[in-house]
Length: 344
Image (cartoon, rainbow, N blue to C red):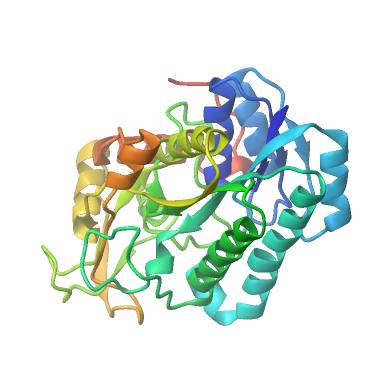
């Protein structure tokens, strides 16, 4: 029996692959490679010493998904596949709803057909929208403010309805905060297409000289230094959260939602300072206008995950910065770089 990981060649998915293999699971990966690279799977195989069954397919293709289930004995699914850029979702909402929501419906239909009723779903803290206060708890009413966040919230509601229709379903919804960092080997990490959307890969690309300067959007928020505060979590800790959630899913039924965050917020300027301290590399930046819709502060209350999953984040901000820089340094052109040696 194996675990199917959709989007398993992506930034988060590839780290989940490592965690599951180390825990003794057999895994199967499906990914359309629209925002990922086949090389990441080869790197995971190098890290773990285990060959991975990989299918380059789109979850929007029901026939292709059914082939995967026919050819393999699957007992659970970790569903990471999906588009994830907030700005792009505003420009192309139908594309996001089609890919994220319809793709999940098709995946769920195939799971139902093959009697696979255990799922861990990659949701997002964007479902909370603009919180009235922090830290954010799972009991907060979702109020997403962009198509990406709404697509994640819609999927959560669909999966809850799926369980209501048949209580044999066991589904864990994981609301991510802000994953950064990379595997300590420097072999796998975040490899965005084009100009990065997220803060840490922009910082590392400025440090590497690929970008000239970091733009800091606003410095008039009611925070420690006026810049936005976020909950940054090491991607390896996030991946371990999926392992814990999978174990929970095997041993229970119903639908549960958990925040995956550290519970500690860092401002943009604090993250820049932490990176400079960890790496010795200066990051030039300039303050620009705030972006519409950005919130002043967003960080998690992770207590439910500690109690319900036995999970907590182990890596601090220094480790996040060091590992992100190791990945960037070893792979200046991402997965287009020559294959590196493992450096643990």
